[in-house]
Image (spheres, rainbow, N blue to C red):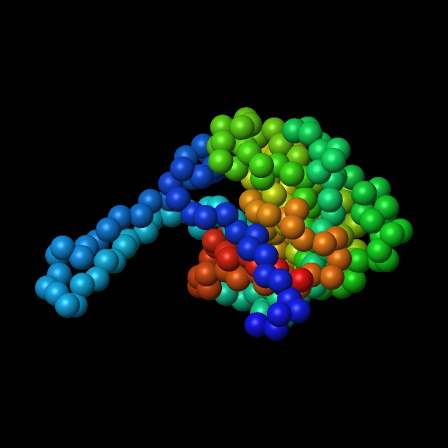
Length: 226
């Protein structure tokens, strides 16, 4: 790797104790073959996992809410590896904070209009509660995105959006951001980690889902290059 670049891991580690939409994340890992079961020198440890597809840092493909939408394996590499901007609202975001369109317009006054095929991350600072699942879930009261903000970003023809909370929508008033973004054939990423380490512009992001045929969601390894 060129020493001029720094790699940032934006992915939470999967384990059974992480937050999930319904409380328990549903992830389970079991040892199916252990070293003691083998004859040396050929020793192995194997695991079986059972998990919802929308666990941890994960992607929602259009088919998550659109019956005729693209599924995970149909997303193109060219839209999953793209430029990234970070909208930092961490200094003002509380549990009821909603990202309104004026935040995007103020960002663009400073940095220029968001370009097509850009991945837009909203950094609210909520990921600081990740290791305290009850607080992170918070009865589905956490920073979210206004539907008009999603509409504005669709006008910008972004590749997708991401946020460091359980969801772009809290579900209290339905899931309009999901329907707007995924309905326009874009993608959503939820439960992002370490976005505070990114510059507001200039990063390249790699959104790398497990390539699941007919999958509407998938765990991802999300990394950025700055």
